Image (cartoon, rainbow, N blue to C red):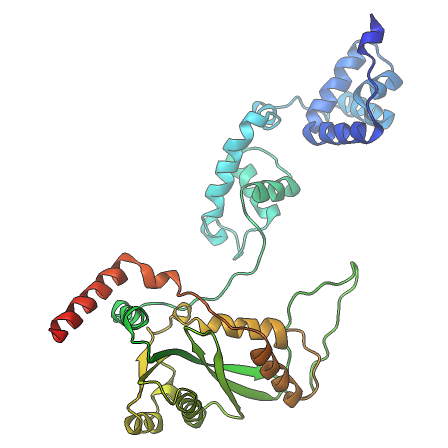
Length: 363
C-alpha cells in the first residue's frame, strides 16, 4: 500500500540529504537521467520533480543533446563518478605532491589546487575540480600553511657536541648550572602576524618613520626555566660580557657554570675569551654549527615575538623593550625539554662512551 512508503522527514534533514545528493551527482549522471526520462515521454515538470532539479536544467540538457554538444561519458568519466575509484586518484595526487612543480614542467615553486587538478587530468584523464582537490588534501591530512626556514646541519663535530651537552645535563653535580645563551633582535618595526579580524576587513599596523633596534641577550636556566637577560643598543662582544657578568652574579654559589652558545662571532671574540680566562668558573659549551633546534632558548624567544613584538602598536622602542622585560618577568618559567635530535642512536652511543671515559678517569 502507498501509505506504507510515505515518510515524514524533517525539513533540515531533507536539505542535508539533497546537499549530499547534489555533491555526489556528477553532471553526466544528471544529464543521463534527464535524457532517459525524456525518452520515456516524461514532462519537464515531472523530471524536475523526480530528480530534484530545475526545469531549466531539463531544457538545457535536451537542447545540448539536440545540438550534438552532449557526449556520452567515457569509461574514465564513469569511473570518476564511482567512489571506489577515488582512492586510486588520491594515490596519484600524493605521488604528484612528492615532486616539485618544476620537475613536471610547471613554472612554479608550489602546487595550487588548480594546478594539481590540471596535472591529475593530464596523467589520469579525469577532470576533478580544484575544490574537490582541496577537500581531498584535507582528508589526506594536508593543510595550507607557511614553511619554515632551516639551516644546513652539517657540522662534522655535531654528534660529539650534542653528546657533551646531554652528558652535562645527565651527570652534572647539584652545584653545577647549565644555561643556554643567545641574542634576540628587537625592532620598532613590528613583525606582522595573524590575528582575529572581522570578515571583509583587515587590521592596519602603523609602521614607524624610522626603524630602531635594541638587542636582548639572554641565558635560559635549563632546570629552573628562568631567563637572565640584559638589553643593549649594540650586538657585540660587550653585550656578551655583560650577560656573563650577570650570570656570574646570579649564580655566585655555583661551583661550575656551563653556558651553551652557538658559533656566532661575538661569542668567540678575543675580549670574551680573555674575560672567560679570568673567570674559570664559567665554561662555554659550543653548539653544532647551524643547529638552532639544539638551543631551547629559541622557543622562549618565539614566545617573546608572539606576546610582545608581533603586530605591536608601540611608537617608542623603550616601551617595546619594557613590554619584553615585563613578559620575561611575568610569564614563564620556560622548562623546555631537549629536542629529539639529542636522543638519536648515534648520540646515545657517544654519551655511553663519554660515561665510560669518565669512569676510567675516576678510577
